[in-house]
Length: 353
Picture (cartoon, helix red, strand yellow):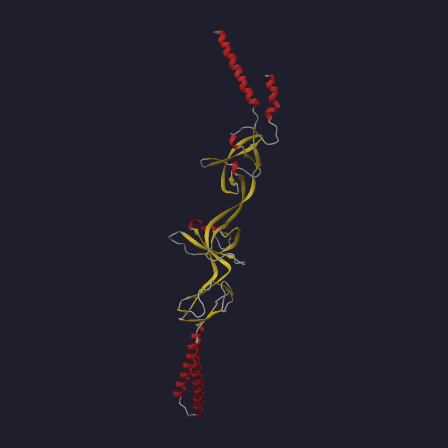
């Protein structure tokens, strides 16, 4: 019985010695670490918008008439006031000639009556009657000129015309589309913003827009107008931005993805791999005297592989950036290039034991 008890005690002693030996032989965990730095974070708002021409108008025939001339090319540039199309004016010109002749005759008759009135050979009533006739003749002439003007279609502003859909000699009815003139020197971009994000938008903000046609070319612009009324059906507000378009690569009707840079700020940042999550709690391992301490932090945005740190650490604190999964609070660690501390005393201690 005494022999058996001695064997057990000896075995326990050897086991304890082996555990202590293994503990001394295990080196500190090798981890990567870096100091907390300050980085720039931005609150962005993404949306989808539709491109509109800066100015656009559909020029239509004001009356039913035959087209006598078309003065534009498909997709060509026209200047403000340039004649786009002319409709037949034969009857209107004849009416104008007759009205002008009547106006001239009425004026001459008015001059004679005024002269007679001065010498006392005409009454005031006859003079008033002739004045009315002269004014009516002038009005008839102006009406004839307006009728001719309706048959000359001009560009209201400078821009580019659409493809031609009618030909010279065709009889068009009132309202028939002849051409569309678009000023696309700059583009209006309309997009909607949810009511909950309205505080992130203000006039003058910079935006970036990308189209499927030019995926590698972002277009810069600014927010010009925010609709003062929120749509009660969608709970969103319409926003209009202006994009310069000097080379006219953007076309009205294009669909563009919009990114609005709402706010920029400088905050502490940690790599995403350095931040541990436990439910709603977030933490990092801070390196102090070759050991790690788990510190709870308050986080913000995630951007470009970084996590915004709002509270819990300060700039310059050394945190573990790689190898956090093998750590627990208080364990010793070593950084690349450092010798394991256990190797310095582990060998002799083991030999002495």
